[in-house]
Length: 288
Image 1 (cartoon, rainbow, N blue to C red):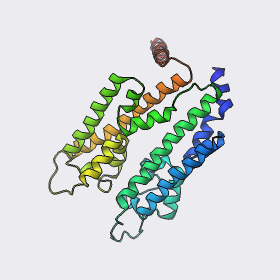
Image 2: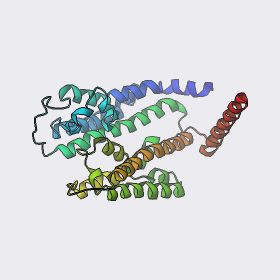
Image 3: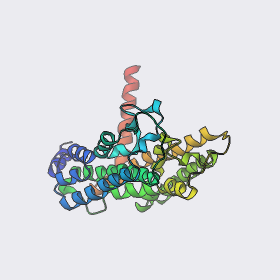
Image 4: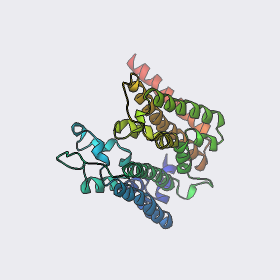
């Protein structure tokens, strides 16, 4: 139990690296002495958020119905991954016009809204990399950062597993999650592709990666032209595809982390399962 802690100190404190990155893209990498990566991360990820807000005229959160607006309502958005950017946006623009006077959205609001959301997700990937770098320290084995595989698995569900050589699992993930998203889009007749109409469902669905992003832009967010009897099922399936992919990405990260720390990923899993079974047995015996 002592070795992992000493490794963490050798590279820096993982929690500190994560929190610094959360508040300011690249700050965690600067803390770890990775100056070039920290500067690039700040320029790219921070620039994405700034450009997104400017293109959207700061009006993205006006999509939220007035009754849904509150102190923590934006905590469920993808933008929360870039907390510093989100705080700046809320202080500068908030939820828009307090009088709720109808006015047209700027022409760049769709791409701007997406850029700010993607900045939040990109900063989450930076947090993954900063945490692992701090934890591994000098003991890190050669290989790509877990963050690379996490980003690949976000972009195309299952791709992270495929790049790790776990072909069967990658194919199963791709078929099930992309299929679930496609089914949701069909059942909701494309209404799930609009952040303006379904703000929170859209945020969850974005975790499905490029299938969600490209489908939205190819479809052009079709207008609602009549009754949609299966829209609730469609919205749920689309959001579930994204949320399930978020769970899958944890598996991708854990596998690569074990490899780069010089451990056997399969053995690590068996050890965890055995520990879990032992705990269940102890709980059962104490209850009896």
